[in-house]
Image 1: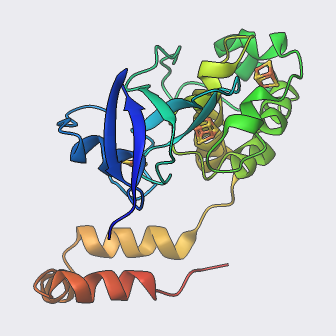
Image 2: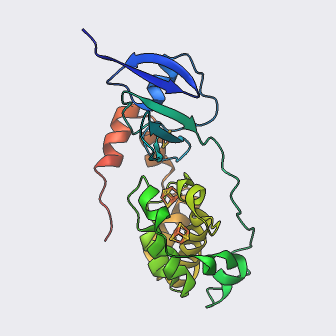
Image 3: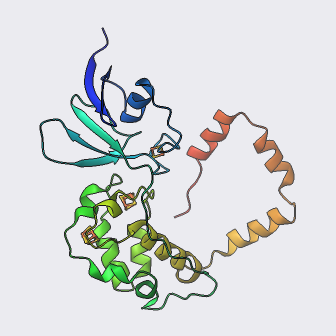
Amino acid sequence: MQEMVEVFLLGKKYTVPAELTIMDAMEYAGYKLVRGCGCRSGFCGACAVVYRIKGTTEIKVCLSCQTKIEAGMCVGQIVSYPTNKRTFDIEEIKPTANIMGQLYPEIYSCIGCNACTKGCPQGLNVMQYIAYAQRGEYERCAHESFDCVGCNICASRCPAQITHSAVGLLARRLTGKYIAPECEHLELRVKEIEEGKWNVELKKLMDKPMDEIKDLYNHREIEK
Ligand code: SF4
Ligand code: SF4
Ligand code: FES
C-alpha cells in the first residue's frame, strides 16, 4: 500500500503520497501551478518554496520540484520575489573596478551572515561570489555563480537586501563580453551558420526524434 503523509500546503491540511516531490504533492492536492512552476527539473529556478516541519522552529527553503515532501511540512510558495535588478547596456559599460558598486552599491552592506549560502539549493558559495563582486574580481564571481538558477531564495534571506542572482549575472556578462578570451573557431562557425553553410545538417538534426536529439546533447563533446 502507498505510504501517505499529512502535510500543510498554503495553509491547508492534505494527505498526499510520501514519494512525491513538494511540487507534485501540490498538484496531487489540486493546485494548478500557473506560477511557481517551470522546467520541473531544477534548472529554471521558478519553484522556490519556504517550509517548516510542524512543531519545529527552523524555516527552510528549497526548489519544490527537487525536494521530496515530508510528513508535517507546512509549505508556502515564493512564486515571485521583488528583486532589484538594474538595467544596463552591456555595450556601454566596461568591467571597471567600480561598475558593480555603481550598479549594485548594496553589495557593500553585506554583514557576512552567510544566510545566502545556507539557503542556496544549488550549493553555491553565494557569500563568496558577492565578496568577489565587491573586489571587482568579475571572472571569479562569474565562475562561482555559474550554476545560479535565479530562484532568489538567497535574496529572500539577505539582511543587506542584495539581489545576488543579478550581481552574478552582471559578472558573467562582463566576463563573457570583455574578460574571457575570444573564441575564434566559434565566431567562424556562427558566421558559417549565418551564411547557410550548415542548413542541410541543421535540417537533418531538427528532423530527428526528440529522444535522439536529447541523447546527442547529453553526450556532446564539451570544450575545455
Ligand atoms: S545563488 Fe541565489 S538565486 Fe542563485 S541559485 Fe543560489 S539561492 Fe538561487
Ligand atoms: S545573506 Fe546577504 S548579508 Fe548575509 S552573507 Fe549573504 S550577501 Fe551578505
Ligand atoms: S520548476 Fe524549474 S527549477 Fe523547479
